[in-house]
Length: 445
Image (cartoon, rainbow, N blue to C red; front, side, top):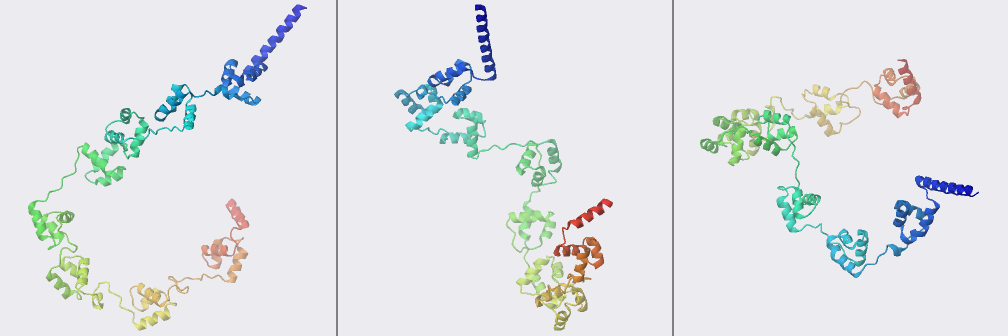
């Protein structure tokens, strides 16, 4: 009898132990653990319970919240002594919460909370002094940011951000590859620095720097001799620049450029001589401006400006000298002919009747009178009018689903675009029946 009782007790305890092990594996709480939690959680807190039961603090806090268990405030609250308050006021403003927390064996959050209650504020140590800024400006491009940070007792990111604020940025150097170097060697004498830089997607200074490092220079310009300078200063403005360039055996841009340097250029250089002015006055109405320019070895515009200064205006005699001729003004008969026939004939036909070479004069005169822009007058004569008759509209309505726009246009002698526009006006566009007929035709094809 006694043996049976012992075996039963052993079986019950063993089953109970197995249940607890299973529950632990599954993360479930046993009755013993719940009792321990209820007894010690309010008094000693969650960390003590977690250590005793071999569970995580997070699971203990969650299970305590399920049963509505709360920790007494007196457990965690440790009042501050006068010495601690003095240390907070001394070290918190300068060194921060983490330093004071280590001294007092408290959390940084608790130190911050107490400092806020005591109205003790943190000194902003991120502000840079004048000496630090001067040192940064002096050594930023000479030393690495890490070395500057060690010297100023700051972090490297703080040094870089402050340099950016001050506008001290180090540009990343784009390395030259073999293709770019070959292009530079082949084209630095043919192209300008600006053109090379644009082609290689670089700056002009980088191109110049690379050429200087490679010890490659463009051909030196021929220096101006003292004799050439004297000739330029004596003759510039008296003869043409082309003649001066040929006499000095130089290019025209080099002559003009050096004249700008010597400040010899004038607005209307070279100046007209008295002989040239007399020639213009004598022959202005007998010759064209181009002929005078050829005689005097001047430009056409120079003659035109000088004639305006001399008070010479172009009259009918001067206009008739032009090789292409100049259209004389319209006579009263021609004006009447344009008024009577403008809407009956084209501008080209009117010009042919009046023996005029251009059509622009007729169009301009018609615009003055108010004849331009009429629907009856067209640039090119058309075989049909834009207006559709009722018969044509009815034909489109009846055959829209049976025929295509092209077929309707051939029947009515109208363009395909015009039929499509009229279909839209009549509200026939977008018909599903027509779309279906087109699909059927496409399938058959």
